[in-house]
Length: 191
Image (cartoon, rainbow, N blue to C red; front, side, top):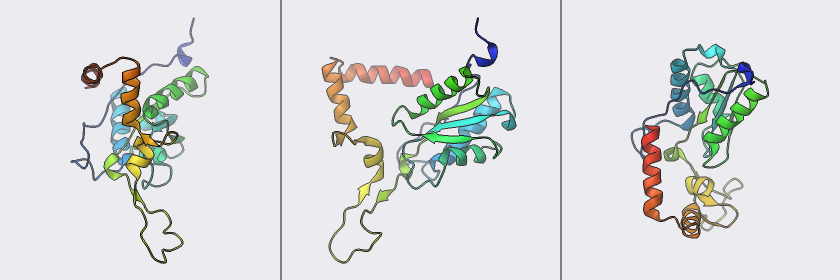
């Protein structure tokens, strides 16, 4: 029989409002959005911020948000500064991986109360100016879109991830309409 102290249970969940690129939430960086969600999840769980023992937040587009974005989100949410916090990057699976890591830690008996989730702000992804640190003597330098380069571009095959999705769908014989229907039902379950 499983020990109740090492059996992971999700006791609350929440998310931000569904935003759009450069929309109403674009003034908030990912750690600020994460803080809102952490604060609400803790409140819905009926616990005090000081009862949280660890925070794990998935976050892909970390450029320009400052050091330790997981810790930023936790502290801005009112979690005490002595509580460990981290951000992980597993691209699209980052938020889910944070939940899996929390569950594994609970099973291992490391801690009992975690906040785990994800945060992102594509609107705040910076542009990169490579080669400017040592000065540009003359000529033109390229500006690189950090949202595409760090979040949507495959670092192994040098192509957009959307192309991989199309190829995978074709290979698995899953039509775009079927994918859209699946995504729609998934979204409806989330809201």
